[in-house]
Image (cartoon, rainbow, N blue to C red):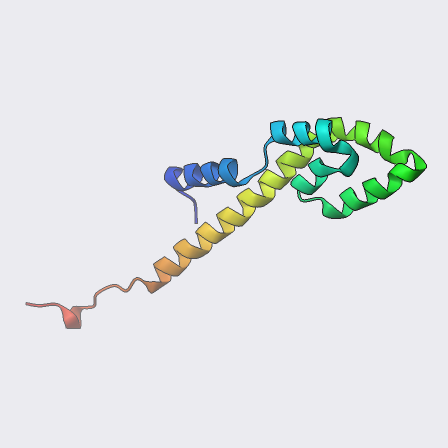
Length: 111
């Protein structure tokens, strides 16, 4: 079942409202990068903890610099996950609504 333009607009609005912001991710990276706040913000808690622990062997600092280039992709990935979840929910709701609709039969018509 294809989505209408209104439904697609609703999905994009929800993604922009509920999804992460690239600007906020960069601010967190710049000011709180040593505690991997940007990764926690983007839902990457496991890699955030690994990154914090890797600071002790200097690899974490290099990883922190590399993250400056990875942030846009991480934001897009998170937004795509949100978009997919919302689309699935919307399609499930619309299909259950369509299943619940009953067509009147001839025996119940008033003549």
